[in-house]
Length: 377
Image (cartoon, rainbow, N blue to C red; front, top):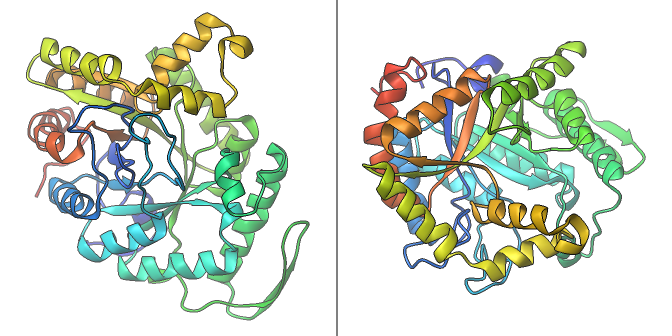
């Protein structure tokens, strides 16, 4: 990597790119596009490995998986085939050289002593390129698979706080310790080796609620979110500034990352046509409605107009900022996000392997010329 292994290096993902770009969701079948088109993402290991090689060579900063345990049904059983994310990350870290690879982990489902050891193992294999995305969970059906319940929202973050406290104590302490919390009671805990290079993995949280954001501000290097008002640079800037202000009030710094869904083609017309074809004409609406029903979103609960808005938004890759257009337009939209203070974005495509080469060849050079990215070596 050409650098040491300081906490700053980890946060920078070992490069000088002002704006970070990652690929979000390739560990799941269909990725994040709720579509029936035959070219939709397979999610199989061969394609994930090929994508990791391509992204690593292209200078993409990170790979971020979705923590998913079963599919959403519909005509495609959307995200029905998925790879467990710690194992997935470990395999890809062994196969790559520069890229940071996240695991997305439901804290209530992974005992912290096991989790801490798994993360250190992956971190040593990747020589400091492992990163962690903590989620506290929303999908009751998945939790029941484990014989667990989600619990009340605030209690999930109480547990998450104890969980991450134990994690850090295992990574930092050289002597055995006891932990007696409200949710966790552990005795004579220790763990060796420590994370790679004497520093700790970059930690991100995807909380959107006030409690979720407060948890991220207390514990994490980054908040992975789609701030409200993402359609307006001014509103987006205000949302990012608010999060950073809350962190500063606690004497901390935090980066804000967001989510994007990209359709990039040589002309605007081609991009718009393909997007309409995949996300409207060939959308797996049965899967979309299944997802919304799990979140208790229906015309009866939110009203018809809001329901249709959320239905359309959900089809856009499970939510996220849609960026549809030619290379100039796509680059300019990303530049707007950077101007608003977003540190980076995890993006998805209908088919990552098919579409990343064009994005790499046409959009990345434009971002380099704008000063957001270093020239690829």
